[in-house]
Image (cartoon, rainbow, N blue to C red; front, side):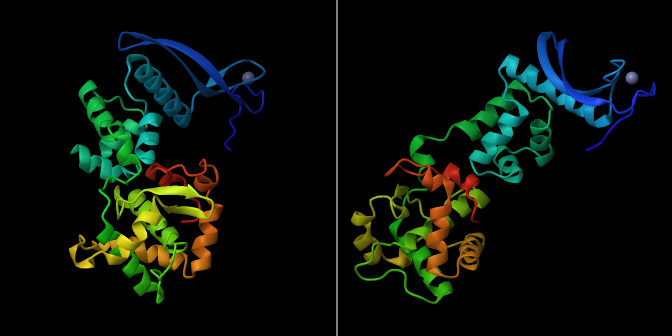
Length: 270
Ligand SMILES: [Zn+2]
């Protein structure tokens, strides 16, 4: 960490939060920011870094006061939705520089704030558990077959309860959501005692096995890469099973509860 010496020769200055009040764009705002202060003489020093922090704190205090999303709120919402800055920029039809600036202190217009909210807060509760897709059983089968090919083993076995397949599917759906803003299969996953599992898998097992892969929407190159990455990370069924059991999003979910795709941002094993 950087230290700054008091220009009056009192030695190192301390970094401490100071409260400020200011009228900004006609609005009274209170905010705190860390500055360097000499413990001996009380002199405040400004560094470029500290000035940036101060400006961000002011911009965020102002945005909070007038009901605009703050920089940290935009970033957190974006990440919880699984969007990269590039993806959000594309969806809003703005440059990526705008997203970066809004997240770090530039104040967005009211209309841009509404556009941000439309992208970041409009998710229906149903969508939050299906990864912005409609469930497709042929696609579940297609993804399962792709895993089988890459792993060189059968996952869709007779009398199987998808014990391992469900974990592979879960990681692939979650990772796709995180990377591409959308899951692969539209499946919902429940936190069951043996790990994340396809919701209502008992009703689905037979139908998935009987599904016609030819009718599934083909996998894009990016989607194949996601599956490949999951295989590379978990080359053995044991790996994927154990990894899933280490995930906090599964361990902390109430038994039987659906695991929202927004949890993709919190996975630790991939
Ligand atoms: Zn001093």
